[in-house]
Length: 419
Image 1 (cartoon, one colour):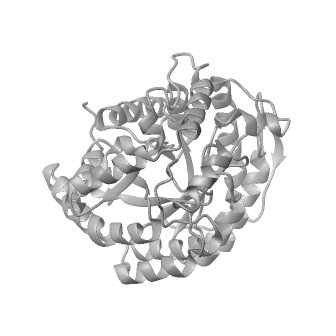
Image 2 (cartoon, helix red, strand yellow; image 1 turned 135 degrees about the vertical axis):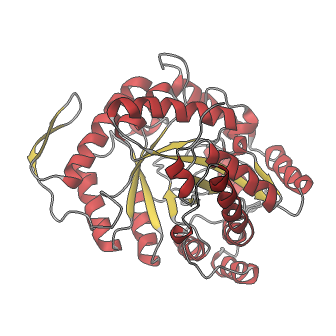
Image 3 (cartoon, helix red, strand yellow; image 1 turned 90 degrees about the vertical axis):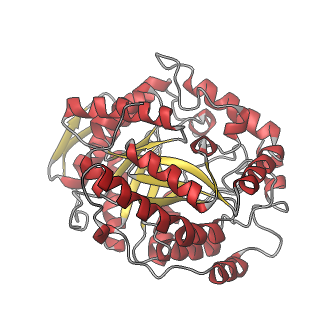
């Protein structure tokens, strides 16, 4: 593992994001109790708490069909607009599938959402893994590497239509003829246009990310695995004269002791809904089987890994706040610019992460910058009021449904339906 972040990245504070639980069942396919809900009242409150806790981004999930623990789903673009309307500073990343959206239609949505939110819209382009969502709508299902060919064309068209007048593109999948969208996005200092995120662990995905994405998202990975992803994306980016930034998914279990955190992880896995996880495992293995090198996104994921369906356990963000902060900064040293987090009990744990983990991360970032002969630019750290444990608990209590949220009264039944 030789990858080291460039000095400019070491000078820039890490950014933090959270997965929006806009699908039922939470972020683990388990019947363990979770104080988390998929509906708007809970999520609007969570978004406000997140931005007051130092989070700069939220990522809404895109799902159209019941699948492996998510029998109910709110559509990402509409839900993102609602969250943008409920917040003042939070940037909301909405996820979209090429093949289900046309880049011109999405570009118009991006420009409008950016205008309405004062420059806080962003998108995550997802090539897709759930075949039934495409075939069920009567849409063609492309083989793995061909999906990434389409995605690259899609992102090129999307950026061109967002930023240029009279944009044209003649591709295999998309043809744009001298088209202009107006109004354009908000002019935000330091931002060329609304950010375009893109992810995947395969060789094809890393190539696309390097050539066209602003941000590369990776599923959860250990340090060595993530360093390999960074090197792959950088190699592609250097050939294209680009410098994308890097994000990483991680499931956070912050507890008073490492033993307690590990016990929580064991309970999550022990209460996994086996038919749902095994069904997901089969589906994603089939989706990645047609890669040239056999390295799809979940190629090396075990049953236990897939209980958190974006491999968040692999990042090993569990233990005391100090242990988690040290782990996070180890990832920064090899290239991470943004950490995308998820939790069992979102409201309370997002607030707790802001109170207990972020301050330690900031001190360790200062030490890391000095180690490499530079200084952390603390002026870029969000100045936020913070949220107390009591405030977070009260907010969750006020927005969780009386019958239980995604926990033992909700997730178990939900995953029975979705298996």
